[in-house]
Every structure is written in structure tokens, then in C-alpha cells.
Image (cartoon, rainbow, N blue to C red; front, side, top):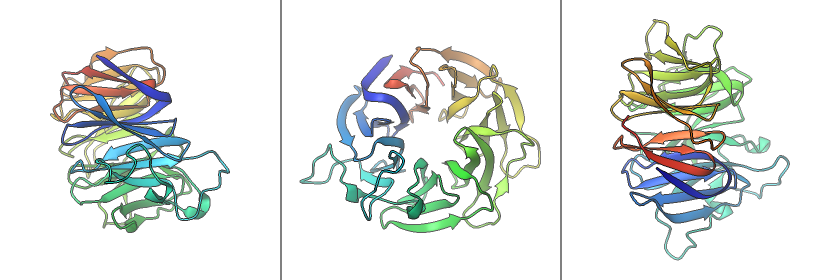
Length: 316
């Protein structure tokens, strides 16, 4: 097990690159760190002009990193800059590799509202396309290279979009709710309208992830349950208890046989999908675990704690 230190305060996101070379971490200190595997040497510390880096995820070809930010309420943003960045993993020639200029960002949400980006999801099949979840009420897919909206969906809801996830086939799931901890899940193929909703009755969802093949959608319910649902199915989701602990984040192992589930109690649970039960658990007593990720080889996992990223061998 490795403890990767350097962030000041809560680490908000961790992500492995699809090529397996990099681990990215984003923090409440506003910084993004790139760790090179397998030694996990920190190669770049991208110090952004924002108070908080909230989310980060690699493009499908591992060449870029999408990152979302927020600042203190009432902070006056300069003109033509905003809360989303599309950063090259390799620094541009003749630039400072540890600085992200304001002009490398733009408003990915309603610019007049100065809202925060909560989650980014690069498209698995379409180059430079990134789905963005944020405090306004629209689901947007950006052509990040050209900074134009490629597709958008405006649901008739007054809630924020708090999370987005792509399946391997490009199906987009998004979570909409009154706060960042709860809401309802909808699926959108980018064409069909309205979006399909997941039948969950009165249950609220706090986290979600697709299986690697896109055939299943796993949902962490705020009631402390795990749900498994087949997109397009009329059947009700299969439910199981997670010790009555809501999940803050879920990651799927590449072979589809297990999930990593971070709980609000600070424990990461390894869930056996076939046996439909907890197979192992990890508790490092590092406070809130805001995010978890599994490497493309399925042998290594990472968890985002308070000021530290834990990396460990995982047989998921």
C-alpha cells in the first residue's frame, strides 16, 4: 500500500488513465496532480487559479484531462474564463508545466450563474467530447477541443445535474437531485428524448457506475443500499444492503466481477457482483473517502482521502 501525499485538504477525485500510465488526483486545494505509474512519482502539480478542483477524468486516448472547478461564492471570475478545463497531459512546449492559465478554462455551464462543475465524463468513443454535470439544470456534452456544445438536454426539472457517467457504448447516465448527495437517475443516448428514467420508486441515488460492458448500471442509494439495473429493462432493480451506509462513489473492476464502493463511514468495500455480497473491506481511518478508482489492469485501486491518496493491490 502507498500513501501519496501532497494535497492540502480533501482529495476530491482520483482517475487512472486508460493507457495505465497515469493516476490523476484533484483536490479541494485547487491543485491537480499527475502521478506516473508504477512508481507513482509525481510528474506534474498543476496549480490552478481556482480555490477548489472538484473533478477530473482522462480522455479515452489518455492524452487529455478534463477538470472541473469552483470558487468561493461571490468570487468575481474574469471575462471569458470559467469552470471547465481540457488539459493536455504532456505540458505544452515553452509553458510552465505547473501552472494552468485562466484562459485554459471556459464556462461549461450557465455563465451568468457562475456555477460549479460537479462531474466530468469524457466520451469513450468520440474524441474530445465531454459530458458535464453542474449546478445549472442542463445536461451538456462539450466538444472540448473547440469549446462548443455538441449536444444538450434540458429536462423539465428544477434540480441540479450532480453526476454524469458514460457506458462503454456511449449511453449517458445522469443524476439530478436537490443536492449533491441524492437524486434520480436518467439515461440518454444523445438522440432520444425524453430521457429514460430508472424505476426506483421513492429511493434516491448518490453515486453510480456502469459495468465495463455497459450492460448493467450500479447505483449507490442514499438509504445505504446497492442497486443493480439493466438499462432498457422493465424489471425492477436488484437491491442489497451496504450496512445502511450511503456510498460516496463506486468504481467497477475491468473484468466486471467486482465493484469498489466508498462509504460515508470512510470504509471502502470490495463487492462481489456474482455472489452479491461484500468480499473484503479497507479502512485506513483517513476521514471521508470522496472517490475511488480501479486501474485498467484491475490489479490496483486508489482512494481519495483527506490530504492523501491511498493506492493498494486489489484482486477485484
